[in-house]
Structure formats: C-alpha cells, structure tokens
Image (cartoon, rainbow, N blue to C red; front, side, top):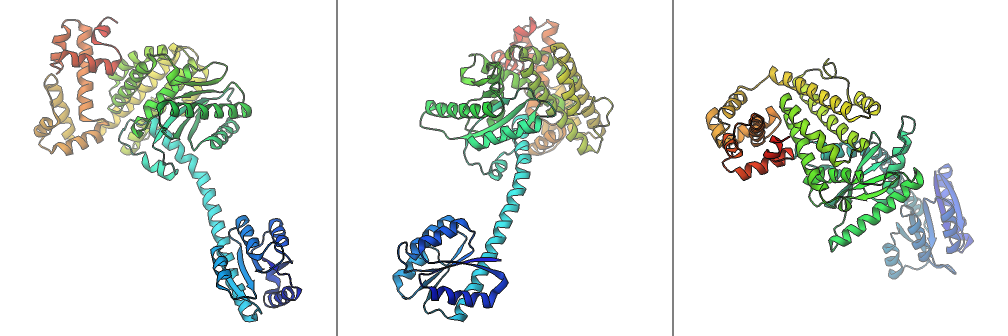
Length: 529
C-alpha cells in the first residue's frame, strides 16, 4: 500500500489525478488531497506519505516551500512537481530540493502512470533499505556488547602487549586517540537485579559518552571512555571531571547516590590501557564509601608508583604462569599480596576485584593453552571450578588470609596444568635453548648467541620461543636471573655487588633498579624482609 498526497488549488486537477491513479493502481494506493501548501504540510506531518504530487503556484505557502518543509520532515518521501510553466528557474530549484520528477500541466495520463510506477519503485527500494538498516542495527545491538567486553578484557587483562586494539575501535566507530578508564562500583548487586543494574549503567553511559562498556564483574563495570585533548592539560582535566560528574548524577538518579566511580588520568597511546585501568582502580580505593567520583590525580602522591609495582608483579605472575613455573609464581605472589593490601588501604571489595580479574586472566591463559594442545581444561581435577566457582568463593570470603590462600591455590593449580600441557609437547630447540640459558645465566646472554648455539635464525628463535613459552626471550632470561638473585639474597653469602655479577649484571645500580621494578623492593630491602 502506498499513501499518495495530491496538492493543488484547482479541484479539477486533483479529480483528474485521482481518477488516473485509482484506475491504474486501485487497491495499491490510499489517496489524500490538499488545496494549499500549508494544508499539505499539515497532512504530511500527521500521516506517513510515500509520494506527493505538488503544484508550484498556490496561494500562501508555495509548492516549493511546502516541498522544502516536507522533505525536511521525511527525506525518503518522493516528491513530484506539477506546474503550468515550463520554467528553468522552477525546475532548477525543484532539482535542488531533491524532487523526483517535474511535470507540466496539462498532465498526460501515460506520463503520470509511468512516473508513479517509477516513484513506487523508489519507495520500495527505500523501504528495503530501511528494513536492512533496522536488521543491521538489531544485529549490531546484539554484537556490540560482545565486542565491547572482548575489548575490555583484551585491553586490561591480556599479557600480550602487542595485541592490536585498533580493529575494535574501528568497528565501534571510535576515532578519538585520547581516552581514560573509569571503574563504576554498584551497590547491592545480586542475581535478581544484576541485569537491570547493568542495563541502567549502559543507558547512562550512552547518554553521556561513546564509552566502550565492559561486563558487570562482581559489582563493578569497567569502561574505556574516548575523549578529546584540549589546548591545556587543565582544560582536558576540567572537561573530564564535568563529564564524570554528569555521569554520576545520572547513575545516582537511576540506581542510588552510593554509586562509586574511580577515574584514571587521560592517556593518548593505546598501549597504556593497563596503566589507565590500574589508575581507575586505585582512584576507586580513595572514593568516599557512601558514593561519589574520585580521580587518580587527587590520590595520594605515592599511589601511582605503587600501582606500577603492582602491575609489574601481576605481569610477572602471569608470565611465569604461562611458563608453568609454580615456584616463581609462589615467590612473586608473596611480594604481591602485601603490596596490594597496602596500596588499596585494606579495602576488601577493591582487593577482591583485583584478585578476581587476575584469576580470570590466569584461567583464560590456562584454558587457551589446554585447548591448543587438545587437552580438556574444565575436567582437570586439580582445579576448583571456573570463574563462576571463583565468584562464589570470593562472595563468601572476607578475610585477607583466606583470599590469599584461595588465589594462590588457584594460580598454582593453573601452573601445574600448564606445566603438564607443555611437557606433552616440548620443542627440542626450546629445550636446548633453555639449557643454554641456565648454563650461561651469569654471562651476558643475547638472543643472537642462543640462536647460534641451537643453529637457527635469531628471528625464528624469538618467534618460536614466544609461542612455546608464552614470553619473550629477554623477559625469560631476566626472570630467571632475578629468581636466582632472590635465592642468593636469601642465602646471604654474597654482597649485592657480587650477587649482581653472579646473575649477569655487571652494573650494580642497574641490577638494583631492575630488581626493584620487578618486585617492588630493592635487593637490600628484600634481604631484610
């Protein structure tokens, strides 16, 4: 069915057009008539008109003026001009307005019929395009949250810093290079209201920003918020604060005033997403317990430094877990837990969130390696359930000691699983390379020397080593050296200078700097622990 509007100040013209159209198309059309431009616009605004015949010369609002208003209201409606004058000026203006056809009076029956058929084809095409657009929109509405969640997981939990985030941003139509992270903590989350609360968070964010919204993990939602870099850092910071305060007000009205938001600093490089995420979590720890917004630049001066130490320790744990190195994971965790409690001021909820995300990443790492080797993961008896089981334990546990024991137990279980998988299929080149590294740990080992020893190209060895062990050659060597350094420090027989030489670091100051970056304490401080 096509709704057709006939507009002319002469009754005979409307009657003639009605007769022609009804005779040719009958049950396919519904005809409306108007005798002035203003009446035509009124009908147009009240009814979905597909095709309009409009006379140019009418009293009051002219035909071209009426077409301009009707086109603004419905760009896809097809306009056909009727005129007693074959004037170039009128025709040109009609073309500029996007008119489909310019017909001169008296109208020819065959021409009207053919013009209307052509117009109906255009309407059908527009309807099909609108249907396709609606279907595409529905698909995107379904897919986008999945893509957004994957982006958030990849950007803040992935141990592979080289993973390209650009395709995600392109798919989500985000062009801004600058961004920041915010961590939204919701009150009173349970299984009954989780979905409703999450929908309200997404709605509020959509009203304020083009943010990429992560899933609801425990009682928190992590968001990547694109932004513009203004003329000065102060202006950028002011705009960021205004935006987050608007978001907080909207969330407070929909959810409650005890919503808490932690906000990171503004970054301009996509490679710094993990740092920004950590800053958002740290800021949340300083947020008022009854609700509000906290920004990392308002946190304690030493919080950023400790935060970087926490991040380094987490990366160390995940790298050694990928290598199946249970012993190093345990020793690194022993440094990690106290630093985490101190940095987050004993905030149990914040600590739970941090440990939960660490375990999710560890679980995904173990699961991926098992899948690649064709080994079942969930059926492994050493593991106490997946993320859902972990969530249940976290929900029921409130003491630090119990949390640490559970997390360490899970990490060690994943290590054991990964070690078993790797032992099933160890590349002989990597075995030989590892032996070479162990034998020359106190020397200045280079990738080129190791490649020459196993008789392969350095580039090939680097790629193969990363695939087989889950970490870069240099990171692997550094980790082994520093683990050996910790053992020697515990023995207490060597001075720091002698110890640095024994682990391949001729420069004592550089050794101390690397050690502190990795473990958060200096060699001397570690010895005195």
